[in-house]
Structures are given as C-alpha cells and as structure tokens.
Image (cartoon, rainbow, N blue to C red; front, side, top):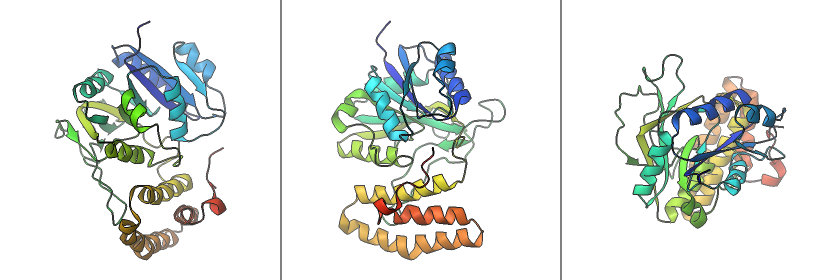
Length: 307
C-alpha cells in the first residue's frame, strides 16, 4: 500500500451512522493515497465492529474516555502517517477532489500553516442548489469583545468567495495542516476540551510565522450540532469558558484590561439578564459557570462533561 498523502482524522461520539456516511464520502471523493483514522471518545456502544465491517481499512482508536476534541485528535496524530493531516468532523460529507485540492494548495504555498475549505450547511434538497454557507473565513477576535465575524455566514453560495484568501482562523470542522507544521508548532492545545481549540492552534501557527487560508473552490457539507444541539448547557458553558480562556492565553495583561472591563460591565450582565427574562435558567447557570471558571477553575471544574 502506498504511503498516504493525506491522513483523515475524525472523532466519533455516539454518532455511528453519520461517521459511516462521512467515511463513505471520503472513499467517493478521494483519489490520492490516504488513510482514515477514527478516534472514538468512549461512545455508549463501541462502534469498532460496525466500522470495520463496512470499512476494514480504517484505523480505529478507542480513547478510553471522553477526552474532548483536541486530545482525541492528538491521538489520531500519533497514529497517522500522511504528509498532510485533515481534521474533519464526523458529521460532514466531502465533495470531489477536496483532499487533493487542499493538499496541493499547501504543497504550493509553504508559508501556509493551515487551510480550510468553504463549509456549507448540509442541504435538505439537492447539493449545489442554493447551498447555504456556514464558513468562508473569519475576522480576528476583537480585543474588546472577544468575538469575531464569520465571513459568508448564512449567505447563499453563488461563488462570491472564489479566491484563496488569508483568514484569521481555520474552521475546526474541516482543516488541513501539514505534518511539518505540527512538528514545529506542536499538536492541538488540550486545555479547551470543546470549542476555541482550533482558534488557539491557529494563533500559535501564526505566531510561528505562518498564514491561515480558506480555499473556497473546495467545499464540504456540515451537519452542524448533531451531537450537542443548537443550544445546550454544555455548549453554552464551553463556548463562554473557552472564549475567556483564549483571550487569557493570547493577549498580554495590559491588552486584557479593556476586555475584562467590557466582559464584567457589559457581556456578563447582558447575558445573565437575557437568559433570566427568557426563562432559560439552565443556560443562565451554564453561562455563569463558564465565565467564573476562569476565576475558580478547580472549584467549578467541568460540570457539563458528557459521560
């Protein structure tokens, strides 16, 4: 068997059917040598037998516990052999030649440390007809609010994003990184468990002198939030915990002063009041814990860690 050019690494957690659909889409769209690595984060039913029955070549890793997104991906890195590592959500489906195009782009642009394709929401009808964009790049996180703008979000794809473009961050649902970058910069940051880990990793890649790009001529479809849901205590907790954590890890103490003033005087009371008025008490509690985790991490812990 030829040495793989691309290692596909995906994390499964109680989503066997969509994982099988994603694997099939890799076989349907990829012609260069590749390998597929599935890291299972302790699903209730071990999917190894079902995966190997349909795809015996897949490299299967049982994590032994719910380690979170970054740690699971790092297990995949340790087992991989490809020159390019494509970290892809299990709830996605690829389009033709996606892996070839991304890897070739990286080969032709050695100063690019990570690249994502155009990401569209999985369509209800025929693919390609009024695809709705989820991601076509992002702006930098604001030093004041800790938030940014996702380019193209909810626009109909009319090929308005058709040029390779430098962007602030790749998207964790689909991002390719050369192995040489991981050797130089290090693997996924494991402090986040879920959300913001790809932003932090991209920040480290940029600090090492590399660029982050989006290649809109390549497209992937994303069945977003199948595991966690569009709004859940788990999601609210980790997004808000990790937004503050990202700012703490990537900004100087001096530059954090206006951010924390805005956080405690605007963001915190506004969100607490909004959840209270809407009667979303579980989400209010999750938001409160997420923010305060950055002050008392040991006291709060990870109360929404899925079992």
